[in-house]
Length: 130
Image 1 (cartoon, rainbow, N blue to C red):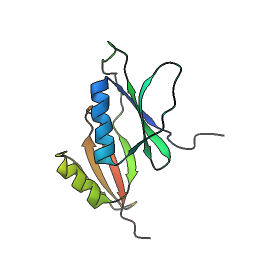
Image 2 (cartoon, one colour):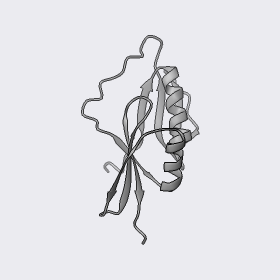
Image 3 (cartoon, helix red, strand yellow):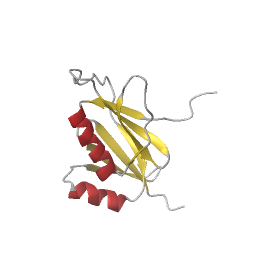
């Protein structure tokens, strides 16, 4: 019994920003919208998937509860990705600035960028040719 991995990231924001975040993570990053259960709390939003795993939950804040939350020491979150060329093309077409770093071991290209809410995102692409 123990931690098996990261389940998901939750971003909580006003409806207008949640819509911008949904478009960004679907159209630019490459996640896809999928099933989101109905919650008894009345919570609204989207679940975004990588394959069959819901890795990002976007939650719409209640009216009047749209203040940004303190992120503490969170530096960024990262996604393991495929197709570096297509991803760079989508970022370039959307006019989203990013920085590139190459890591010899474990053989990665990393793209660093910010989402529409200002959170730092890292996209990792394996260059290992095994």
